[in-house]
Amino acid sequence: MSTVQVVFTLNGAAVSLDLDPAERLLDTLRYRLGLTGTKEGCGEGECGACTVYLDGLPVNSCLVPTYQVRGARVESVEAIAAERLGPFLAQGATQCGACTPGVVMTALWIGAHPELLETHTIRELMAGNLCRCTGYDGIVDAVSTALGHGEPPV
Amino acid sequence: MKLLLPETVRDALAHMAGRDGVTTPIAGGTDLLVHWPVRLGERDRTYVDLWQLQELKPLRWTADALILGGLTTYWDVIRDRRAGDEFPLLVAAARQVGAIQIQARGTWAGNIVNASPAADGVPALMAYGAVVVLESQRGTEEVPLDGFYTGYKDMRRRPDQLIVAVRIPRRRYSYQTFAKVGSRRAQSIAKVGLAVTQSDDGWRVVAASMAPTIRRCPAIERLLQQGAVLRDSDDLLPAIARDVSPIDDVRSTAEYRRRVMARVLYDELRETCGWR
Image (tube, rainbow over all chains, first blue to last red; front, top):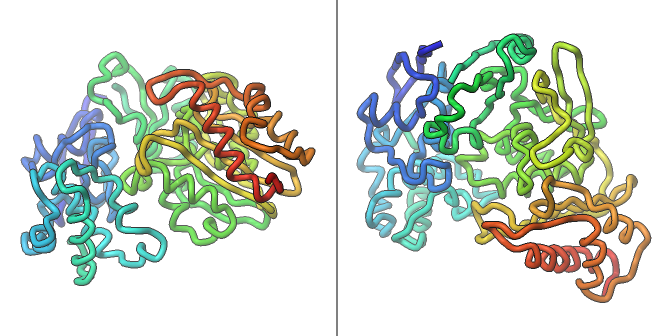
């Protein structure tokens, strides 16, 4: 087998691609589809900069072979409306910006599932998104603010 | 790389039976995808994709067991309220595996076959007496997890066998604890991992990152069974020396690991065992 056909829903629209089975979802988004909002940080599932939603759950797109999203629903940071970023700017949740696309994805997922806070803290849920600038307090504050709004992420 | 995309477990087992040579099953990919595109030397591998096999996804409860499917993820268990009530160590361990991005994709069966000596899920499963259910075209085989590993990354799984389930017997536990020491609170790999249970079946003490495989600690279990009275953590060191063989590596040293294992075990158990 040289290529595999992958049909999936990306940010609400159907996408159909023929690609190398070794291609990572991160590379498909960035280099094949031009959606460069999703960043590569570590490339090994540690930093969370490449976080996207796969069937509604945050995943590291560097660890997802694209062929596995056949029939699935994927949302990348491009699906997030700019005005949703207000709390992140207001609370000092972003500085150099490298982690921000991933942080925003995980944060808005928490915002859409406030019931998670019955068992988890914001810090635990955000543990998969490393930030070397903010010291995390601004991020936690922004998530708390976004929670107040309780809107679905996309 | 060559990729095979079976739509049923039956087809997956046919692929694994050998006509394509030795195959590597891939589920959530959280281990296999690390540095995946640059592992050029391994690109002639044949992968059998499991991710679409819906029949392996759900976990289910029976009268006497919790049965994790071959594709049950950490997040599936974290979100199962009953699992939190009956098998809290599974939930505690799952919450220590990376964070949500990994928990949503990583599977318990994958944790078992990846066979890392530092795995988080395996010690909890082993402390609960889990049984690995392997299937192949030749039939079903069940192997207790505490007898599954035969050496570093060596295990009692033939290349044609797939873990289709992990069965965890439901027992009444009078004591259970999970402890992990890493370089930071979240997203670290264990320098020392411990899972301990006491049930009608006796004590189970399981250590991670202390030997070439995750393993039970029979000498410590014997001490606990006999109700030995210890005065401080050093009293555990002789049994630890018999049970495990830690090494110096990039994450820690053998000496540190032995001492930390002794102290964590002592602190965790002192109240229950009436030690000082």
